Image 1 (spheres, rainbow, N blue to C red):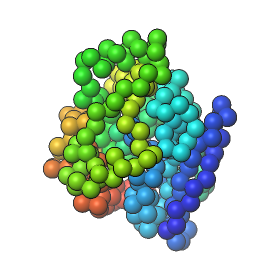
Image 2 (cartoon, rainbow, N blue to C red; image 1 turned 135 degrees about the vertical axis):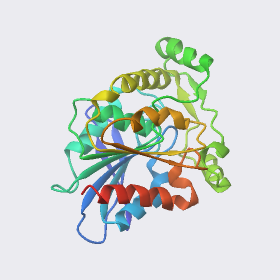
Image 3 (cartoon, rainbow, N blue to C red; image 1 turned 30 degrees about the vertical axis):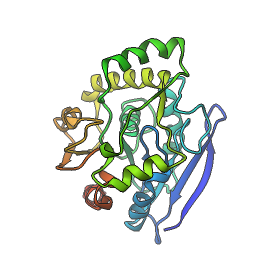
Image 4 (cartoon, one colour; image 1 turned 90 degrees about the vertical axis):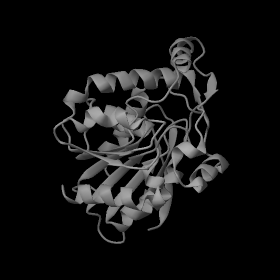
Length: 270
């Protein structure tokens, strides 16, 4: 399963990176993977390879402002821009005629959930990993984001994420902070827009009508496990909590349990 890197052009002309992994045989489904805050699609290489080996064509963009994609680092004019970028990939399917699964982690989970609650073209299935319907953000940072997001939108503040919060495997945090494509700050505008998107998503949960899997680490302190509980109460949503896992379920034990859970759930529906 060879990784390939291409680019695609957003509606506003921005050039965004797209990583792909192709299965050895004809794809039985397609997966569109959306990464989280501060990171990039390259951190999901093992995920792409596993899913491709399971028979899926996988595409994973670097969100604008992250990784190798264009844009001011960790900045977005409005949250809808993320959804518009994603809509291009959902509409232009890599493998027509097979189910499309949208997978999002953390901020990517918020983007994926916001996307399916919007009026954009829909995927067939949704998988959310530690979706950021809320987060462990101090009241001071929330206030700064809301105020400075308008008057000093490009001001970048540290995310204050620690390696220990990501995974019980110390090498995950070490690799994260050694990665030159990881950006450890967020602009006040991105903070303001993300907080507003969280509130909108929580208000709109009753409208979620697509079959959904939610996975969450039981010891997640970045997006506390309780944040995804309202999703688990919805019809058509299955929620799995991995006890002892931290924020990145795909990086616990090499990700095998989380990936087996995701593929098993998809298999049962396609």
